[in-house]
Image (cartoon, rainbow, N blue to C red; front, side):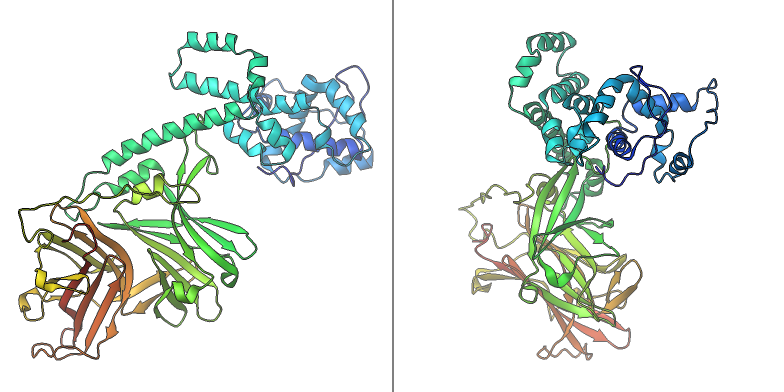
Length: 553
């Protein structure tokens, strides 16, 4: 809520609310005071009786044109000042309405404040509370961010008890008789005896409870899984919940910059969020970057404002102070360098200057809604510990029945997407704490699979676009024998030239490999470049899963 900087123009008639003459052109001190009062009332534009009176005055067919008045050149010059805000048109009607209701108080206030610089602190508390009583809950909370005085007044229990009672009545949790009886029991003294902000906290708690119930219903709808082991209705769930994602940059001085998402795309097992901006914070001064899921808390307003009540849930926090150690270099072209930070964060930096070109995040659907809903602004959501299902009958339990879904793509282009079912291993393949599971073998030519087209990583900013060769995105979903998600990740990978590869007579082209590794497992693939068809062919694809994961023996 911005009160400072609004330009107002007030026209005062030669009349008075209490019989005393009023100057046609107010003095500088009085004019500033009236502007402060007018700025406060502008907060209620579109939400209170001021706009309603203004609209009635504007469309009144009996309205007569204002008669020309003989004023000094100073007065005419002051009235010819331009109005920079369309919301202030017809402000004379608002001033007259204010004077009709609070004329005496305004005149007394003008005399008291004529020799002071801080006019807003001299406004009587009764007038401020009356102003605040016409604001909706979101605007009332915004007004509390203006100053310490406004914060204290905006926590008034009388105001918030009225808001809370109307909210409960609207949501049919109280009957009309119970509201009336509660109003009689909780008279003014009883309400005021509560600690400041009690009814405000109670109202916000009710809003959060309602939002959580709505999110639980959405989560139930998203529990249906597709053939790849991911939620099938993720796009619908995100749109129904109004969920968005935001980045919070923090520099060495503690200054925080929040940027909301620019765009989002959905795939079978993951979604990609894009951030583009003309002005990014200085990258060399940044120390941390946080990824939050942002949920709008529904209020009683007909239309939820864009900057209304929000709930932030921390998903991941990235260390930018030691960027070289925390990041992994992916590739580059003539304009940008591409870096990856786990989990899912991709940062593009300009080559000429160490500034941010774009930021994108790719997140797997597995447990994404829970991470985006139930965490707090400072800590992520902690999932309950997984209890493995033990089987004493099957000696090979935990070594068979795995399923792998892999998707290699860049933007709208898909290079390779398939599902491997019935994958298994043996106890002899458990080495160094990892069990080896082969999806594509060297010697099985029928399993070898090509990548469609020439692979590259597509990037785009507001003004530029390009691609980085031999780089692309890879989504991996591994399900165990109970068809429960075992290992899920989304990350960019780079094809690197292989120096030590097996010799196959059917593939005489150049050899490449790609790898991804984290605490759960490792994926290794080897590819050959076919000069005749100008395409890559996957000749080996192996998973190394950590045996300390509770599903394995």
